[in-house]
Amino acid sequence: MTLNNVSLNYLAESGETPALENIDMQVTKGEFLGIVGPSGCGKSTMLSMVAGLLLPTTGTVTVCGEKVTGPEGGKSAYMLQEDCLLDWRTIEGNATLGLEIMGRLTRETRQLTNALLKEYGLESFKHLYPRQLSGGMRQRVALVRTLATEPAICLLDEPFSALDYTSRLTLQDDVWAILRRARVTCILVTHDIPEAIAMCDRIIVLTKRPGRIKLELSVDLNTDAPNPMKKRQAPDFRSYFSRIWEEMDLSVERSSALPQQT
Amino acid sequence: MSSDHQLFLNRLRRTRLYIRLAQLGLVVSFFALWEVATLFGWLDSFLVSSPSRIWQTIALLHAVGGLYHHIWITSLVTVVGFVGGTIFGTFFAAILWWWPKLHLTAQPFLIVLNSLPKIALGPLFIVWLGTGYVTIVTIALAISIVTTIIVVHNGFTTIDPLKLKLVHSFGATKWQSFYLIVLPGSYQTIVSAVKVNVGLSWVGVIAGEFLVSRAGLGYLAIYGGQVLNMHLVMTSVLILCVAAALMYQAIVFLERINWRNTLTGP
Image 1 (cartoon, rainbow over the protein chains, first blue to last red):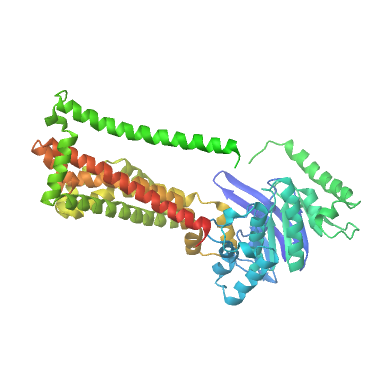
Image 2 (cartoon, rainbow over the protein chains, first blue to last red):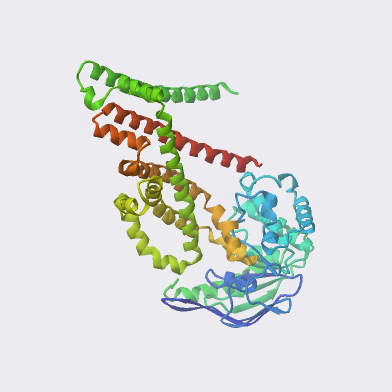
C-alpha cells in the first residue's frame, strides 16, 4: 500500500481546512504500522482515504497496486472506536455482515467465519445477541467481522480508546495475537504511545494540523517477548517512548501558542 | 435466599399490592359516588347520567345488537388509521432521508402542515371523498402522518455515524445501509411513533365520525348529544376509554414480545 504525495483539504462554508499535507508512505505486506500524533492531526483521515471513504485532494492512494477510487469491500476493513455490533443481529449475523454487504456470503465464507468464531472462543455464543456479551468479547466479534472479509489491510482506528485500562491491555494482546496469526497488514491509529510501541513494527508521528510526517521510526525492542504486554517490559521501551513523546510534545507546544480553531 | 432479601421482596410486593388496591379503590369510589350522587339528586342524572343507567344502555344496545357493530367499526377504522399513518409516514421519512436536498426543501412546508389543525380539513375531505369511511380514515391519517414523518426522519438521521462508516467501508450501497442499519436502528423510534399514532388516530376517527358517520362510537356520542340522551353519550365515552386503553396495551404487549425474542434468540 502506498500514499504518494497525498494532501487533503476539508471544505466547509467557513473556509478550507488543510487536514493532511504531502504525505508519502508505504506499508509492506504483513507489516504492522502505527500512526500517532496529537488529536485533530488527520490520523483518522488517513485511514478513511485508505478505505476509500475520502478521496485525496492531490496525490494518489494505492492498495495492492490499484488506485483507490471509492469504498470497496475486501481490500481494507475497519475496526473502529466502538465495536459497532448491531443489537438486532445475532453474533453470527454480525460476524457475516461484511460478507453479506459484499454479496460474498456463501457456504464456504460462512464456514470460514464460523471457524474464526470457534478459534476465538465465541462459537457457543453465536446465536446470542451482542448485549449478552462482555465488552472484550464484543470487540473480538468485531474483529472476526473484519477478518471474515479477508481484507488486504486492516485499519484499526483507535480500537481500544473506549475501553477501561485493564480491558484495553488484555484486548491489545488478544487482537495483536489474532492479527499476527492471520498475517494481515495493519495500520493502527492511536494517541496512546505505549500502545503503538508495543504493537507496531514501525511508527509514523504526525504533526498538528495540517498533518505532515514528522518522524518515521522502526521499532525493534531487541526482545523475544511473545505479546505486547511483555514487550512493555523491554529495556528499550522507555527510550522509544521518550523519543516519540518529544516529537509530539514539540508540536503541541508550538500549536498552543496559536489560537485554537476547531 | 437470605432473610433480608426475603424481607425486601415482601416489602416490594406489598408496595405494588397497595398501589393496585388504591387504583381499584379510586375507580370503585368514583362510580359509587357518581351513582349515589345521582340517586339522592345531588347531581342531575339527566345531565351527567349515572353508572346504573349506563349499564342499562349497554344492556339495551347489546339486546338490540348494535353495540359490537359500533365498537368494531370505530376500532377497525382506528387501527387502519394508525397502521396507515405509521407505514406511510415511515415511507415518506425514508424518501426524505434518501434525498437530503428534498428534505431541506420540504422542511418549511412540513412545519406548516404540522402546526395546521387537521380537523379543519374535514369539510374538504367530505366534499372530495364523500361521507363514507374513506373520509374518516383520511382524517385519521392526516392527523398522524405529518408527526410520523418528522419524528421518524429525525430517527433516521440520528443513527450512529460509526455504524454507517462501518458499512460504507464494506462498500455498502445506499439501499444496504438503509435496510441493514438505518431502518432496524430506528425500531424504537418507530415503535414510539406507533404509540403516539394510536392516540392521534382515535382523535381523528372520533372527529371524523362526528362529521359524517352513521355508525361507530363517535356517531353514538354525537347522536346521543343531539337527542339529549346523556346516557348514550356517557356510554360511548366509557366504552371509548376501555377500547383505547386496551389497544394501547396491545401495542405495548406486541413490543414486549418482540423485545423478548431479540433478547433470548429465536
